Length: 353
Image 1 (spheres, rainbow, N blue to C red):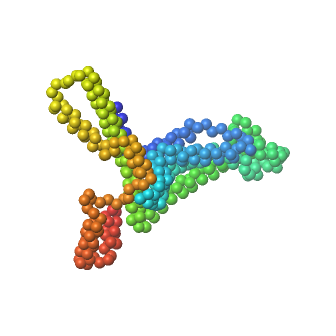
Image 2: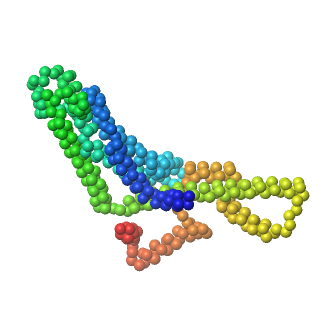
Image 3: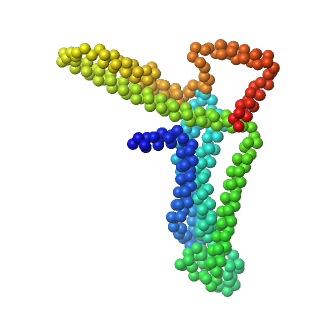
């Protein structure tokens, strides 16, 4: 049990690595699912195209949604988007960064499914067998079939056991042609997503990294703040329950002691230890002793989060402003001038790189 607890704590502390592992597992699962998937084309001109393209698109869309479901940051993104502004504004760039990060991980498994499906080519054969040119693969002048009968015969090309038009069109040649086109689209798809990924990696450093670093920092802050708030609420709930139970048993024991007239011996040392532990448990309550007060705290946290402006205890805003003014004046005397802020920002930027 301790090993599972340690593993769970490790996954929580390394959430990014955990999500990358989940994406890799989903990609392998999509390839394995296609390998075990039994492709059965209906071999009817009314349904071939729908079935073939559906096999290509619908599972990919399902894997994309599954990536959102398995990502823990989705609920955090929605909460940050829907929360009231209060004393803390909402930065659209942070929400956009979080959404793009989630979407990138969710697109891995669909990309693998589409690539494997195109490389195999069976869905393309089922979807586009009706559109084949009979003049290119068979005898188009002496088949003696109407347009509707010809369409039904072409629709049976994916089904080897029921195909009965070998004297009109070569099924092997038609199947190889469509599979070749499907594999060409598969390689083009892989090349496209690789080029897009390369351009994203290569072009992003060409622009300023200050906005990217700021967005990444505050997106991590939102995640860490949520986790620490949940941990604090859990610790408070434990302390609240412990003190409530202790007070209940103390009241019951007091009533029983007074009813039976039972007097204990000299246990002042034990009482001192119990009082010290009781005080430590009460300190964890952070001054919140009632259910209504806790409900109000939780409601205020949701509707009006505190501003992201920290200060030391005992230091007023005026004193902090005077200190900043003195610091800026000292820097101006040393010759930094008005461009100090920009130089400082670039220094931080290069230190990050």
